[in-house]
Image 1 (tube, helix red, strand yellow):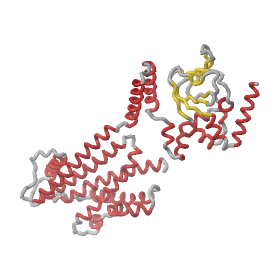
Image 2 (cartoon, one colour; image 1 turned 45 degrees about the horizontal axis):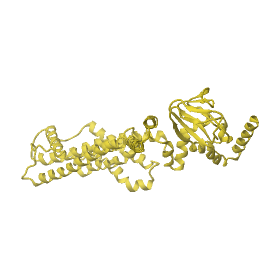
Image 3 (cartoon, helix red, strand yellow; image 1 turned 135 degrees about the vertical axis):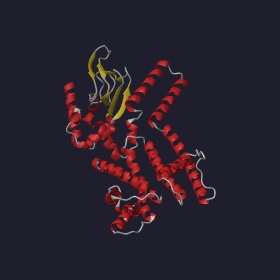
Image 4 (cartoon, helix red, strand yellow; image 1 turned 90 degrees about the vertical axis):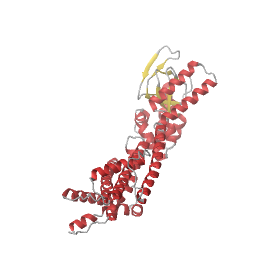
Length: 423
């Protein structure tokens, strides 16, 4: 699904959620004798509600993520029944017939559609998914308390007079104290009426369950609010305990500690290679291309190469981190990797380390001869500070280019020219 379509669905869901909320609040109020809505604004609101629900049927039916068969089986009644304007048909028909509560209640059936919004909102918003789920729970809880309050008023206002607002506030106060298990006892059921006693007991059971669910989810949310940090902390503690048990030197322990601090600050504890290994091939190539494509395009030998080859090479890049003073390459060693600097800087030094020939920074690369010629390194390269690099081994490089004969021939030709120039 394109970003434009995804954004449209997100905002359309928000509009439908608003209309569903209006219906879920307004329809139960018809249970109350004192609630008699009328007038142009009420008719206009009913028209907008039905029109948007009808449009929503079209949007859901043509949603590419849902097959037509699946929609008709799972969602058709939930979307169609609330869209039927029963009250408008009676109004425009000049009928004095009072619409039954059951027909109005069809509007509330749409509340089941809200559950389908949650997955998209969890991934489209920047909030922790646990917070989104908790938000939906409190949304349902608030509506449930409104319905309970309306039912309480219906029972207690029969044969009674009084202000609707006062009665509603008292009912909502009773519902809040009962659901939250506080229960001050200043508003209690009429013990001569079994229906009120049973109603109160049912709400008390509901409140106990809601209270337990809320406390449990909040505790879980606080525990898992930052899973990456928790996992990183566990790994650091495990390594620290290992070094202490083996009585490693203090300076080495400090270097390891600083390394893990840098790993968290630069990558939030995540390892690119680990994440990519858990993805299917289609996503793996796309992720790797987005992360490493620009780095590879700067290398002269890859200019004009087949995009598919670049994608495969990108997957072969391995992230590596070097701490200040670490030797990335040592003079005289046989090179079998080239490196790309993602973040940080390195110095190209003489064999004895006294002379610095060059300083390479973000976006630079070095050691490409290792992919062409397996020969000794002609310089020592050390990290100036913490360096975030990507390495490409000759073994991985040769394996990929074997599938691209034209590129392989160009590489062999380039290697022969380099050998001739050296001789």
